[in-house]
Image (spheres, helix red, strand yellow):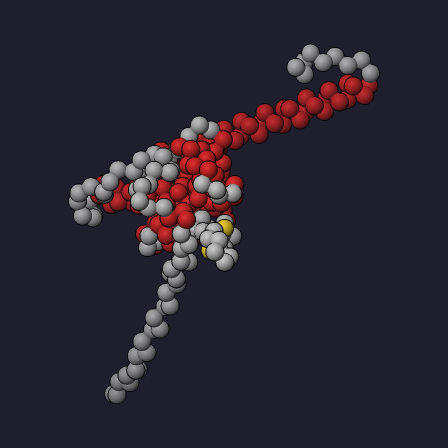
Length: 225
């Protein structure tokens, strides 16, 4: 399209030159993004992680998750993990009206990654969109429905991280044998039908800080000649 533009005046030629320079910069940035994304994908796969099997969780979200989470066993359960990611709902009930709101606490980078996955699911024809629309049909506002979906995605990410960790232990042969439990489905909204933690407020993250044990003082002994 730009090549078809043939301005005759100086101003038009200047605008075309600036547009061509900006387009070249965008193409260069896009190439760098593709290269970086490919590198992140290779790193995630090298870690033995299957986070990218989750719907709309790409290399960037998976890599950021692995970097920030570290050892998933430091979280007692998915509820603690949700508190850490800021996807655990906060009680905002008033009188006879029971409702919850988005949490502004927790790891904001992780919350942003989960938000990206949630919005991608809503935009496309996915189970996440079906779940979001079902929550809207139940009378929830848009932000409340997004909050519910983000919590479901957080639970799915936690389950996958735990499964990956258990598989890694079994691969090196340092842990107990056997399978790590029920197979995790790729859909981030596929939970047990009788469990709807999206609508329940959760406790804050467990205190993981350990105080160092003070060193034992030894009595010095003097040797007499």
